[in-house]
Length: 255
Image (cartoon, rainbow, N blue to C red):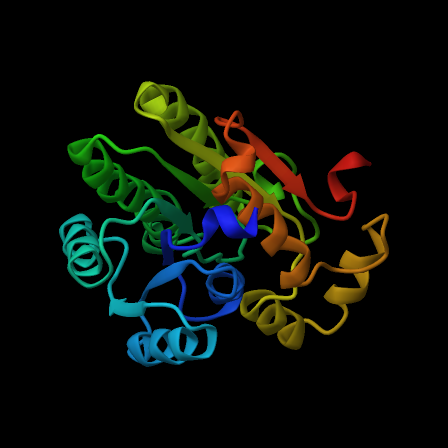
């Protein structure tokens, strides 16, 4: 699997930190050239450091994934610097907690804009370039186990709705682009020790213990638990897998 990935190119949205950067790092150390898209101003510097460390070509572009034109321009910039990407990982995402009776329209819209629309715009820009060149590829959309279950005790209806939509988007695009050999799958992580969840845990010190108590394996996931699955979905070893949503949650959704 490692050698088959060597020399390919991936674009990772939300790649400047957290799970996105962890996935990009894993792929880079398996010989994949990496393009990082993020709102963080230091994303190009982060990419340069990763490329130097892993010995691959790397670039970063600052972009707001809510802006379709900006996303397409970022993909073009990546194509100019790295060549056409044959792999895509969409890891940009946010969540906002709150009682649904009181949620502000702007907060609801922000979650959908980033998690769903941003994912679609990235897929669209990715596929356009492959379709124009008659090439296949593979996209791994980072969804969540929240696409299937309602997490408690936090209220986050917008997050659940957006991630359920991302998982269905993967199925829809997989069927639409199958004839062009572009595979699309969703990865549905459970509670992961990412930057986002660490922030919530710091603000809610009792919450982490409650989460852990509900996970059969007795611990939250770490990036190392996730990157192997994403790498597999990017590789030719998963060539007959498309339109699937794969849960990786320590057993949370099994009970």
